[in-house]
Length: 586
Ligand code: FBP
Image (cartoon, protein in one colour):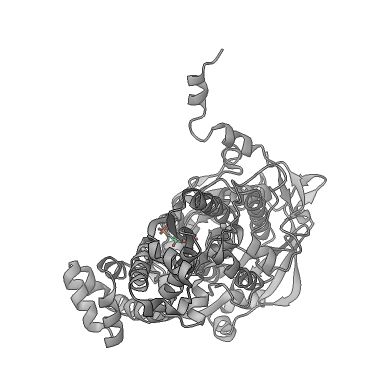
């Protein structure tokens, strides 16, 4: 009989008891892809619905071939088994990992079937440029079903933008006899996909995008309700925040400042707030819209902390979106100026050591921005000078906004406890005053980010990704290029769509220049999800009304749960999703 050591050795290389079980999990499949109980590719029909941003005219002129071909009309998947064979399709991950990516590959492979070749691109766009591919076999696919991470292929953030890179892509495509490329990525990566689709149009090489990002900022109202990975990440963070919320009234002494990943938009912070109900959740978009200064934000936090202390509650949780710093109006102006300076002088700056770099940058800034930058703690000042990524983004995940907030709130509370004038607006009675004076502000800081990106996908992400993969694979078999896969009607069996990528592009300032890029979807202050939060938050601030959502479930009664923000914004009447009947992926 095998002993425990043998069993544990068998679990190496992704064969834990859990990993083996999830590979056997059946997931729901939209009916466009089911024929006689089998998963099959679909065909597509052109709908009458057209897409386009405010910059549609300029975009259509620039992307003459793909926009001309699609007329920016949405396609809908319809049953109709397409049996095309002999295609060679490469797939790549681009940008940060997100749970469910492996199931996109499973879906593509199922759609392509045995008659076509699927090639995995090693380490994202960088691997495409280097022509690094390997054939994805049926056996390999069986090993990644329903598993988290992007480790099967790897990923990176290279932006394909120079003429030299374009020439390389053309050569790689020709050398490897590729008929299509499927890009699994966020807004920047799908911008890359739109550019490649146009570049390779005359070579008859199809390019299709799949919407990925835990940030949730690749969404388009009722047409693309959410990107994949968001559900898993927010459920992981919600479990962790829920646990901390449960700890606070147990130990009764800490204020936890938790920064949550999500580069720009606050969708993640809003979702976690709705799921857990903390005392405070900052929403960057609201702060920008209401033109709140750093001082005002700190003042509001200090007021809530003080009022809870005066009521005898010396603990709480504050959620801080990762991208906050870029949305505080005065900081936004400073960062925009810095982005321009860094883009313009990057060669000079590369040669300088930090102190000289700072001197150089200060001289280029306006007086207001220079003054603000000088007033920031040294660590933050240095972080603002970090190198931007290929897409011009500041690496906000590395900026310790949560510790900046702690320092500033601490100072504010100190002044409020010391000076009656600084706290008179709270209107405390004698008893409350006594409690507030005794209160000691003990803080802990956390950053929940990378731990949310690669967990095993929730049932929603597992199913959503499989279906997105089926759409992408079916699109290339059906001969389409320049589209991004999308699914709507998540509560009614799922409607599988293909949205023209050119319909998503608008003009934005990046790297100190105007570029055509996919618009980032930010939290809308008038959205049902934000408005619900706004209505409830003062109740959650006053006393402990938190929820602890617990670990994500793949089996059982709460497995079919949508993100709250998605269900609210789509106007669904429950949290339950329905993406069709469950089918085995093996
Ligand atoms: P994508 O937009 O590529 O999906 O990446 C999102 C993200 O997880 C952000 O939330 C975070 O700021 C960033 O990636 C971190 O990037 P990196 O992996 O390069 O540190």
